Amino acid sequence: MRLRQRLLVASGLVLACTVATACSEGDPVSTDRGSEPGAGVKTIGLMVQDLSNPFFQSMANGVQTGAEKIGATVNVQDGRQDLGAQNEQIDAFIQQQVDVLLINAVDSDGIGPAVERAKAAGITVVAVDVAARGAEAQVTLDNTAAGNLACTYLADQIGGAGNILLINGTPISSVQDRVTGCKQALQGYPQITIVAEQNGDNGRAEALTIATDMLTAHPDVKGVFGINDPTALGATLAAQQAGIGGLVIVGVDASPEAVAELQKPDSMFRATAAQDPNTQGAIALEMAQKLFAGEALEEQSVLVPTEMITRENLAQYKGWQ
Image 1 (cartoon, rainbow, N blue to C red):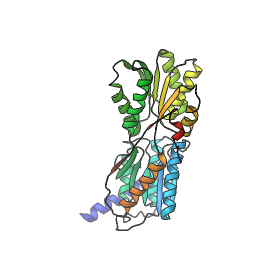
Image 2 (cartoon, rainbow, N blue to C red):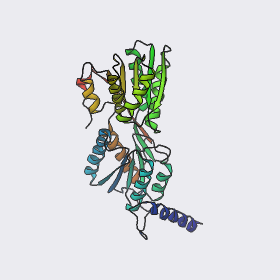
Image 3 (cartoon, one colour):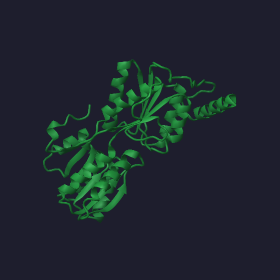
Image 4 (cartoon, rainbow, N blue to C red):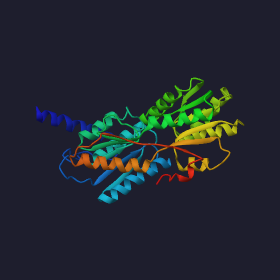
């Protein structure tokens, strides 16, 4: 029976390998790596949603700094907001026999089968910033708290009453948790109504288009919650182009672009819930190291705390590294 199970696992790995461009016929894939006391990580695969976003560049910096300390190499892959691309990248990492995989999934649930293939190949998998089904551990911003803080600030700034817009995002846990936190906060403000909610792609350009349409349909709104800074900044530009003033627009990230916008005294972009992608990347690697060496983690899921960054406290904010 054991021999049959091993043959089935090997067959699955060979099938997965045929999907990846990096595979070649007959290449062996070892499953006997890690899980040994003191085993050291030498190769790291890092997959992020979109490398054009400074957030993920900062995350990669955190992983790279940690890798240099332990003498490991990092291969960073850009998921391009494409689940199919991330599936192919995982299959390539399997063939390359990386020790650990740090994954920032474009689809928290959809990436599950690829994660299982990686684990079957002996790769330690840790999710970073968003959950990934099947990952052995994860580190994320406390996204529910971020959404709660952002929408509490928004509600207070518009006087606890009025109509607002909510620009949602892609099907990943971080986005879903921020929306949950926002709506939880708004339960305490019965005179505030979300008159429109629409999904974007987490990017500024798409948010600009969506917000333009939403503001055309609802020109009397008082505020906008965007699930991240690019989304909120896209909404800010949409309001400016539509000639609408006096809105309170908030986001999540505290990115360099958000900091620059907050420095403008007349901008409708008023606040953002901070997160630290550099620290998330570093913590994810530390967790992966322990798992790879066969050590138990104190916590399988780590939440990085957040705080609101506004014009009032902007001078004390250190920003991303």
